[in-house]
Length: 461
Image (cartoon, rainbow, N blue to C red; front, side):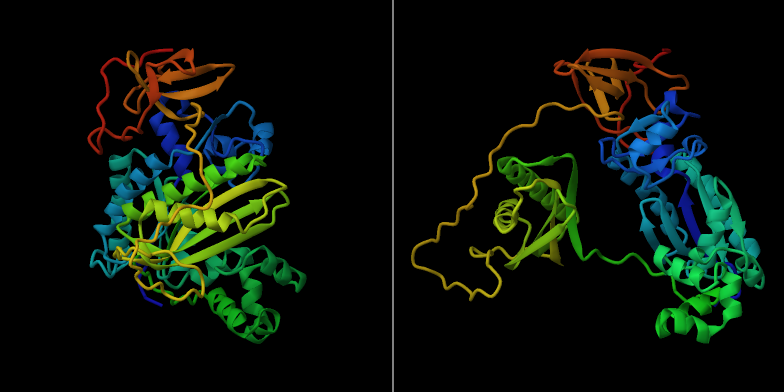
């Protein structure tokens, strides 16, 4: 383990909710919950104002509504979150070539590899400057942990929340770790934590006291030895630059089970198109199509088909997904569908016979072209307009705004932008108003992205 606290861990504060508050002046300082809003919805992120009511991530949205009935409940806007994340990751990349993203809002950085820090003083200066740069670039706050290892840097950022910096000086690690719960250590989840608790071990200090032999007896040789080493603050894991993804996939969870087979086919076709869109955006192709189906009883089935060559052709992926669907019984209803492509490559081999089934011999070229058609006709039915809370919209007269709610054929919109100091005006329209359309997220800070704002479009409510 290194001798200087030059491993940095950044964790953006309540990222999704904070981005929504920054984008919507009327929500600043108020309880905001982002996640699924249907009967089976789950909280993705809660603002600190919502957390004061007991709302937290992974909580059922229905339970959150009981705890904080007056909070603003919004669907996620991943286009905005990815855009902000890219800005943050760009700042991290300027510090070091070794940046290890863990999610859109969290990453490790090896400051020593970047030559920007070599001791506690220089590391602290880099961390403070990074926090200031993130605020200036995105309008949001992030918490920073600095330590001699990844485990300790992550613990530091957690203790720094919200909007702070904690530097753990080398030599103080064991004293810091001793009173903490065993769940703090990497690799200890709920089941392992319960197993240790039943053995009388609840804190990291108690792991160190128990000794390596006892941990090996309880958890096995590899896991037990690793946990014991970490209890002594020994963490040699390096910061690893972002690896290329092994697959690309999309999935949707439905508020109500889908029983109509035609609707299921249409959803699978739409998911296949979205998956190929992501595949092409990454400049990749793939040769294995995977279908995921979670049925009414929570049983989850996956089926896959390997093609003869990598492809990014949406028709090929749609047809493969449709064939895989025919292998799954959806009679009782479907609650989740997903389509993915794995076996990624950096090229697409354009051959006539890209499609195949497992174990099939390669087809020889026939004198007559082989006509390939989908065995399952997929209807193309345009979805009815659906306005979701938090969704970006644009009105020809009033400019950009966001959906506060909809129902009974009406949609309520608040017209405001991230650059307004006061909440915007609220207007209600028919859901099919021809002058109201879907919009794109505006940058949270002027001059940090595309998008023009109509002057005077928002006002006082």
